[in-house]
Length: 512
Image (cartoon, rainbow, N blue to C red):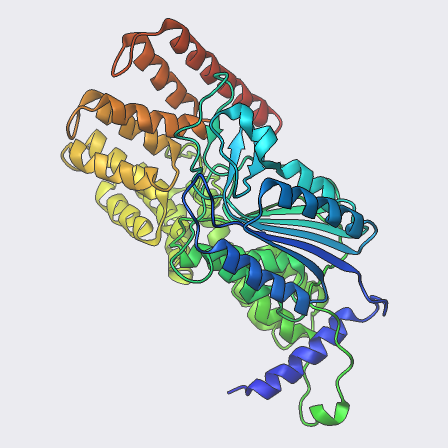
């Protein structure tokens, strides 16, 4: 059993080795940390002031010069940003952390001060702070600019905000961003989705961030991967953090380089830098990390474990390839079951069974196995595997279960059960499930007919950019179902659906 003292000695030596050759010059690090919770015109958030205070304390231990703003008004935030701009110029690292309410409006992202009263979409530009402003601020750093946002909660102003134009849509979470070369933007939840506030001192995202910020020798890209995995585990895969932007090949460490340890203190201990790195990546499902480790530490005592991990991941890659589902973190837009004439179904089933055995907590492989079983018309097995994947948190599997019940594949048609599974998937921001759930409410299948509820789910999916939901809304307005007949409104939604379809074709043509 490793003792805490022994581990500390190894960590100190690992940091020294990882930092070797990076130069002895002390880095200049500047941070602005904001935590807004006491909102005047919206529901209060208990965690952000705690989150910001704890992050600020951690950053100060990491050598940052930190400015704290708790429950900041619009004027407070503007003054703090102006001060940060003057301090960050030429710094090695510039960092802004924000916890509180945020929103997307017509593709732009905004952070909301505590005194904002957003009665109209026209108020946003004057009463909130643009994410673009923060990205420009941190880009002044000579090395890394970093914006961390634990602000993807449900928008409290959306329901009461009047809209000046149909195109000025207000959607859940934040929109995707494309930072400049030296800037990273970290969301607590992927674009178009929302984050949880949690019921403890810190939110799930900030809890994971605090657990990783001060880990010695943890490169920043690995740090955010650790945060992602921990948040997905703690939220049962309901929340997926995401990082936008890319960095050069130069490694970035937030933990300052340590002085060389006293050799006498390490008598009888022979650690090396690979130990610290292996502890960080040993549970990773990213083959590139493991391949990079083997390339750099070919003679490591952990090399055999790394190769074994890579071998296990080969089954995972084969399961994905043979099942034909090119999905990203269980968030695919379509889930059509692949039928590949050039790949034997038995090979796909074997690969997915092996992947499930080696990675029993990864929902994707059970889902892929269900796809294979469904393609082979073994609906009983498909149902069992989808239920397994759903229990781990896969919204795609929940959607497929709804389809099995709705279409009566291998079991009697049961729209009530289909409605239940669609709602489970819809609650995890699956737009395809939202549309199918809305259609059941619209037609009254599987339960009471409710046009208002149908419209609500269509609007949620449309807010995520889902074209079929926009068509559904157009039909409601065209036919006057639960709303006044409005041909102009119907045409507007149909046009938006066509635009979304065209955008999808453009992305597909560009290989995105």
